[in-house]
Image (cartoon, rainbow, N blue to C red; front, side):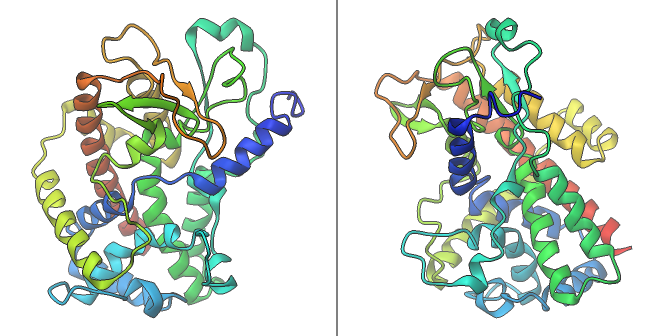
Length: 339
């Protein structure tokens, strides 16, 4: 390993920045994944999961809170559980204290698999770009699954682990949670942190590539607003999305993935390959998007490349497929864990 020659102090700072800012699908995306999974479960499995989740330390404060009257408590808790790991993230002027924030595990949401720009491969040959000992989403999914299964974990630990599994199964299906782009330029020699430092323009608006993909299932600009009225509106939107996606006919290649790819590692590899072939790719296939480097906590530069209408259509269609796959796989994973 390069012993941090590429993971220099700047890269380490980048990792800290990434850990504090990265999200995956926004709450709408995670709720849609949860709803699709919920609808595929038997009543018996729903009841078992509900009993486990009632032991969650934030059951009253979050999981069961602000439930729309027309939604059953079982459905609300099971579907909402997958958003909880984002709820425990620190916020500006956060007053919720240690009993909430201690559950935040920022490094568990992603894995930085290097994607080297094809034109710069020679410059990176033989170099280790990411510390292989850093924990990541694959480690987290395995560990949380073990916590649900083990007889020595207490009920609260199992409930927390279930929330993480629901969330991370969604995360791993967002392609940019499985990649970090490298090129032989000053700004991307240490990676772009899953598109968080990679600026583009969509319909004239500057946006981080990662944030753009997060919001593809549905826009959620006020995600910190947990009021009952907003949750009711959000869930109505989720129900419409789930109804549409439930009838989505998966392409044959994605149906094959459901049959063939059963492991967390295989799901991550799917995301990595899609990031290379779609997320970072110009819509005309001519090469990698010219991402504008975003300064830490800065804005997307005015000269960032416009992705174009074809890219937008392709990205939206792919995001729908990834949410459907995540929902089906989450339901299957629940059934395995409950055996």
